[in-house]
Amino acid sequence: MHNEALLELSQATKTIGDYQLGPINLRLEPGTITAVVGPNGAGKSTLFKLMMNMAQPDSGTVHLFGGSYEEDEVKLKQRIAYVPETFYHPDDGMTVRMETSFVKRWYPRWNEALYQELAAKYELPLDKKLKDCSKGTLRRMELVHALAAEADVLLLDEPSSGLDPFVWRDWIDDLRRWMEQGERSIVIATHMMEEVKRLADYIAILHRGELLDIYEKDALQDGWRKLWLDGPLPVNNLPGVMHVQHEPAPMVVTSDQAAIEEVLQSLGIRVRQRQALELDEIFSYMIRKKDRR
Ligand SMILES: Nc1ncnc2c1ncn2[C@@H]1O[C@H](COP(=O)(O)OP(=O)(O)OP(=O)(O)O)[C@@H](O)[C@H]1O
Image (cartoon, rainbow, N blue to C red):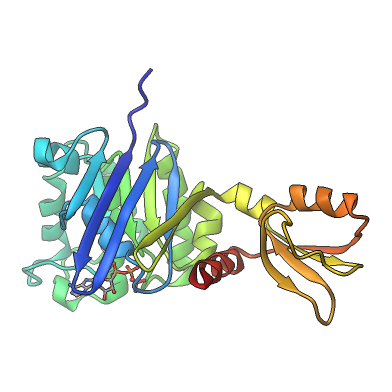
């Protein structure tokens, strides 16, 4: 059976001034949560704009649900709930209530009961004008809209910026609940490692406009280790080596613990201590390795 990708970018490029994104090749499957991570200016928002047809690729293609924006933009966008990095509405004299009635007309499966429940839970000030709302209030409104839209995919560009920690916790729980309703997907750009840890199945790493790769989160956490050794380090050809330290004690950082331990054992080198790495440490080793090339 042909498996229709949630999102497929093939050789997609976009140049803005002296910045170039891509060529990006990326395929995301439905039913998954993918976190897009990378340093400031890596191109995460630009990638989201390509996914939303708010920017068009200079070359290559972007497909969502097997279709393209040239074929039927409205139909595709009705299946997507997008939360941009910064909220913009041309008429900020509108109230939250008016904004909601504007948004809900767009989504054929809009869930009014869920909206009412979430609007109360997130304390949306329905009669307040958008221009009088705090950043966090606008963000809460956008998140509630995204969940109530009953879309097939959420494209979330740093959705938690401006949320206080209490609201953030509710939001993560609500995202998980949202994922449980059928075959839904989330693509989320974030700088918050806690968000990646709690949500992501896959992690796509962008650096200077280049997609380093897409990884299974569990495989990254299982494979990466710091190993302290009791003997001198044979630096050449050890599997998955990302970093080597000779002093004060021999230590390697590897992305492939199982393979390196097998080789070390065959060389008669004992591992004195093993330590798992935090995700942000893993990303920074990947990025440093890329920059050394
Ligand atoms: N409208 C614009 N005009 C000029 N340059 C732009 C514009 N939009 C983006 N860029 C450039 O494109 C690059 C990628 O920016 P983008 O916002 O996609 O990165 P990002 O990964 O989302 O960053 P951040 O983590 O800071 O949000 C940056 O170098 C940025 O300066």
